[in-house]
Length: 116
Image 1 (cartoon, helix red, strand yellow):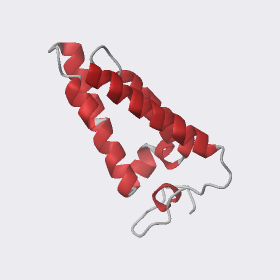
Image 2 (cartoon, rainbow, N blue to C red):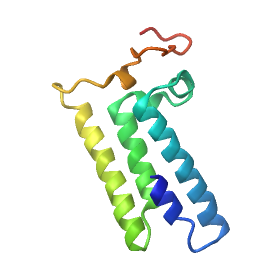
Image 3 (spheres, rainbow, N blue to C red):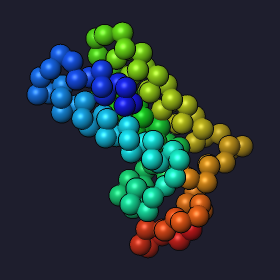
């Protein structure tokens, strides 16, 4: 996502720069969510706590990246494919969500009103 965001800067224009900045920020959010789930992300982006929410988010970001140009086509397609895989994982009963998606990792604070 971050590389797709960097590729989205060109050609320079207001729209491309704004989309590139959002894509890079969302990529940083996803990197953070993949390794640990800070309570702020769990509170304000709780859709990243499920396979289907994360999958739909990846498909959305992949669609933002997807545009003419080899790097953007490949990057957007890969991100969208990963999103589709996450959605399939939601409906695969033998797959358990990892600890960073369940909220039982050390240092995790449940959002107000949620029990772990």
